[in-house]
Image 1 (tube, rainbow, N blue to C red):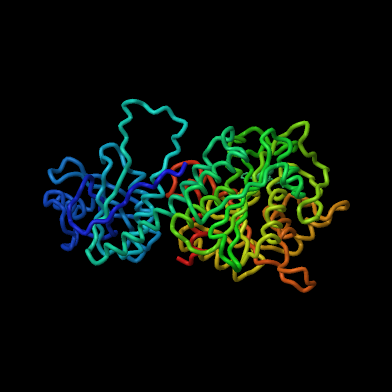
Image 2 (image 1 turned 90 degrees about the vertical axis):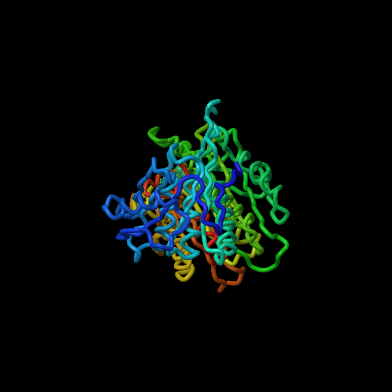
Length: 502
Ligand code: BES
Ligand code: ZN
Ligand code: ZN
């Protein structure tokens, strides 16, 4: 945990160390004259390949040249100049790292032409994001002489300072993405509620402006966190709530993040089928998103207040587990008829959302949860489901996601879904929809019942809130070029964009 992203440095010289990386546009038949510093033999080899049409520079195509006296090169396609935006550069950077083999060595020098600062930064970000492996549990071979990959970017003297600052900031944000992935990839025998809490406390020690508070099982029971307790009580690894505060001494409204942290979801007594159940270790992806975002903000020096709440529990079938049919009382005082113990994420979130809105003064609340299989049915692995009680706020999140290449798709919060989730005969709400359909929407409508109003006044507005269902995007997204396998760390970058505006 807390591994540094690969090193990317800036040089205003023309030297090429290690493998030369050349991002190219589709249709270029020769390297422009302005590309300096490339050994002549290598340059003529590149030009021959381009002139012969052997490399067309289609987006994310690569070609490696070895055996020239001038050294090695990897050409990478950006697509046509019109389409080569910051997203194309980010993907090209990731593609370079994904295509890196032993022959390329561990050092690279990137030489751009016609790239602005944002595109160069995006390329570096793509490299750093993709340079990630989760190998903590693998035996290290003695002859494993793998050195960490590093890259240097050659740029004009005038750009060096600004580019260097932009890349440092990107590296801080990537450290948050990697932290989210580390937490998600960690096997569930080692990632349980209090283990997550301990990692959070250890992490907080390195920052003066960060604090972590842990509400353990006993305290959660005392405080009346009936949702968290009901889900977690059947496990020998007891539940807890972890609260992250950045710049807590600041007054006034602040963003508030809430995460579902089910460290393993067996379904409980409403047991899941066995196939692929191992993937339910990722069911704490929402909490990892919150923790990763706090790291990204803290390490990039964000100066304002942000608070994150993660609701941690392991959902197990046991003699002391909750049953379908139980009625529980949540922190809000509202009761829930638990009709299916596998719809547990919404139970723990009911307490997290209520606490977020009543003990703090949020400008807005965003929750993250691997909440429903139905969301994966609706959107596949391509986009996160996005609901909000405020259309303008939902659009802001959607746009922040687009800006960083993490899609979050607008979904409807309809009164009919709310009605469906509040028509229990014996309780205030029910945790299961009446039918099979619209399961991601009914889940969102359920959560809305636990978002407090701004005050106790009768005409008070509900706190601005958005719900992001990351069931399809937190892992298993094969088209996501930023990740090889396992947890994606999605939406850490979206949240940094939303919160900082940068
Ligand atoms: N963690 C699951 C949702 C999930 C399923 C995420 C598959 C990713 C992939 C959640 O706790 C769950 O089991 N939800 C149920 C809800 C249902 C019982 C109303 C579901 O989606 O089937
Ligand atoms: Zn479940
Ligand atoms: Zn779950």
